[in-house]
Image 1 (tube, rainbow, N blue to C red):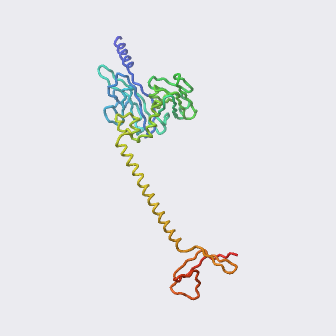
Image 2: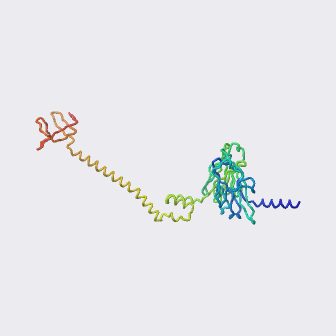
Image 3: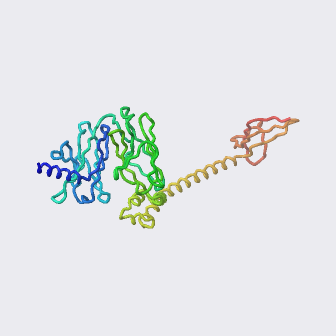
Length: 351
């Protein structure tokens, strides 16, 4: 009788040492993707992380790990004691039990936590954006959708780190921030977090009944957002990305970099030269038109008036032309050594 009690105590102790935290049940749309966060204890920072498929832990099939390229991708964040599993292009055949796992050694026992993934055409609980960001002191809003079958289930917004959950209504999380959940009673409920703090960053999940949908929240300092927006107007897009990510080679994107200055000079030249050529072409055409119009005005007087009796005859246009042979009956307005033919047009009579 003593041995069974001892064995039971050992199993109870072993189960109590499991520190892994993850979701319980998720639903994903066919062909879609989802990121599963797995939180572990600090003592496992250096251990390899695994994603294992199967109902029994001892017989599950490893489909991804941090030191290998598999069907899906694992990314480890030791500073935060969390690793994520990216599942993509999911099919209905991918539905089943999975494990977030860390295989220990003689001094450290295995650490794992299982969850069930359901892949279907219309998921029962899901979010459109699984990653949201906000600024310190600001607010964010997350809309969580659910099917008609979960209309009467309890709706919650929970945090992974401490498993604290908030239900429909308003809950003050501190003196400066609060969480408000409103349910439209049809197909979605909205989570509003106001007065954000930097410590609010992390993983959360929407839940309706026993189904959950993960959401990652990133809270940035207010001055960081201003600096980034200011840099966007001064640096090229490549430099903005490096500045935002705090890349170690940010110095290459300094506005005083000679290579950047040369790029801007070439850009100005490429823009200015075609404009100057176009302006010169317009000036040349304008000069030719003016010269042509000036030549036309030298043909002769435009208006000639002749008094005939009590009526004044006015001609709008008079053109003088050399005559090949003088005709006796031709009328001549002006006398000169040479004879001209005179052509009148547009006769106007004035009383």
